Length: 504
Image 1 (spheres, rainbow, N blue to C red):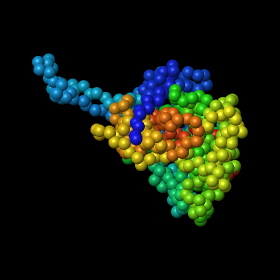
Image 2: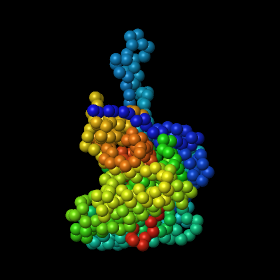
Image 3: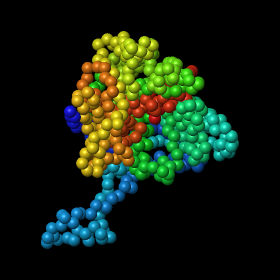
Image 4: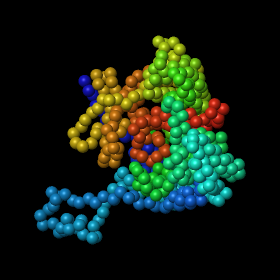
């Protein structure tokens, strides 16, 4: 038996406690949520720049453009249907819409105009630049590095070059809130990434973010395609401005929006793993944690301890030991309490693999997570949820896939949710692929599958790294993977920043 139910689209809250399901609409009308609470809304964001004179110049031009109103480039002409013509009507509608004075309807739903990031718009915030926060890299320095034969050497020397300039800016107070690295095309083409061994890739973007954490200033990397719109799959200029400015606002400790449907006393944790070393058949792993630790989407990052994982004996999917799981969740919750001042009443852990239990003696992570939570706060409710995207599909009549928010169960044993699909507010399906539903593969806890899916649907709207209507994955899972890619570039004794804004 198949049961199907539609889960309502979660609402976001903005300035003036205005609620709307779409981030761009809410920001346009009332601005960011941070304006409601002192300390959560910066009115000025100081920016530093590193690059050649040419790249810094076009990066600063982009900042100036973001301070202005930007009209959407997505223009569509809508003609009335001939079936709507009325005998004896006063106007020839076909002639009207074909005339030189034609009235174009701007398709503002998918790509609305950008309101401008300035103190007079609803953002009530502006970018500030100063020559004291600008460092120029000489083209000859880049040419010398790019001429090396070994790509690994090229990337690390490029990381060192930019890190030296970041250190120079960070050494003089006051420091900027964010440093923009304006990358020349040569770096994108010749120093992007290289395979080290197995699935371990050295990546310039991730390596420089990992290296610079010790300076306590978030980075923003931009390329010329961001400014010019040239290149493959580049979004229109208004959308690029929405995404860029929303991310910078968050990096400067602002809160763009909050979710109204999430319990303020619930702590959501995502657990994933990344390869630290690849030595023959023995892979040394390290767990990484991403936690959208409150209803405002504030992220907290912790790194677990090294542990060995024998792929041939245990399989490709890693699992934590009892002690590793217990320590990881205790460290996370203790940090949560340190920042919030009180423990959560409920903890939800998301993982894309099964929670192993007593049957796996050395890797009893199930008891490790539960006992770790109980030791921090014994009266805490717990939901451990294993999620995976399923090959099961639903088809509906027409040219669109099922609605985002479609929840269905099969024989009350299999529970699935479409987090991406046709979106009524957008009047379309905004993606180029066939959406896959998420399935609850394993659940230990007292919440119903429907309530768990309502939370997952809300967590797909907490990615402040862009201003999209929603992502296909909850931030607890998508963010964990992104964090792991940066974590693998941080050495054992390196500084690990606990804030989400350093990983965006």
